[in-house]
Image (tube, rainbow, N blue to C red; front, side):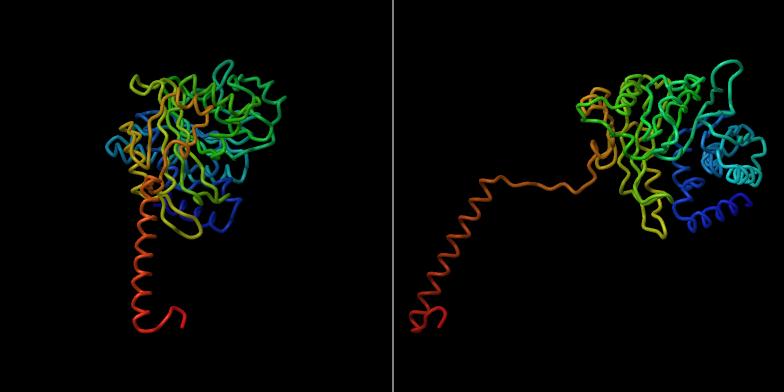
Length: 356
């Protein structure tokens, strides 16, 4: 009860903070959606490299407890790192008030000084990763990425204009074989650079990750959910080692209509969350919601896997044949001429003329 009260206060505080709230608070319904998508097994380890107030980690554990109420003692262990010391303290308090006292939350710059490291070289591996990193960060340049001591950026060096695909690669480097990750990104991360005749780093990274068959799903969210902007975001689901029936495929989901109006921000609906979970679990193409596409189809789109490009949620319009339209117009013209002739005849009998 204390944990729920604390999260309620955090949300109310976030609503009053405007754009700065996006640095520490992700809408709870988005966290619950990702937690259910991850579907972590008993005793799993869950990591958030940009944990903010810890809400995403908590939602991943809540999703497990809702699905396995009789096995709460087997709940996942939570690990997170946060750059801002004040927000780090909020996350620690959030864990205590939820009675998740075994959680490990570290403070520091995850890119420059990741705190969870394996014995020897490399990063510690986790069963699941959940994250909402700051979108389009510009603090990291080519030299940083190229000289990374943990060799995280093997799929390519991100541009200095956006670290989005740097975060994705950090997450992949922190994921065990067989593990799954859910990452909230700017919608542009799915399409920037595609269609350009020039070389583009983000497109090339997307290409490498898609060809490695690490993208399981991409879900476009409704607009005006997040506190730091009105633009929609997307959830990128990554998986190391897909099951046989999903290999070479990606599920694209356009959930842009799955919301209800609310002040100050829209809210992802419970029915919407259930629909997304259903199509993901069933690996289902559903009209105006989802479509399973192949890697070849994504390649044909120059590695633009924005769901809006593949799943149309608008009302279908039936277009008539042009010949039929012209025939109807001609018939209407003839009918009008017939009426005009009849009217002129009546007026002539009354010794009247049009316009008199």
